[in-house]
Image (cartoon, rainbow, N blue to C red):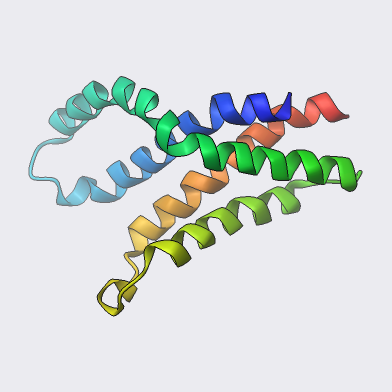
Length: 134
């Protein structure tokens, strides 16, 4: 049941978190008004949810598997364990995506969006699935 929840809800939650964080941080620099930007975002929203599955299904299943194994091994698998799993996925993404010295600089809003895109779905899905294990 844990893997099913992570596979079904993880990718859309990750995309929603990443896109909203990116939208909010880019808002002051957008050349259009807030209304126009929000309208453009609402057009992309349904497509983004569908496209989140090919990109996010593998990380969601791996995170769900890590949470499920953790719940089986440690009877007191809490929020700190889940935060470590979510942040670990973002660190792995950073480590594998920065390949050349030119790319070694870190874009702070982008980094925050990526960390939240892994952390929020992991914690959100865990909050749903912990009811099944207690």
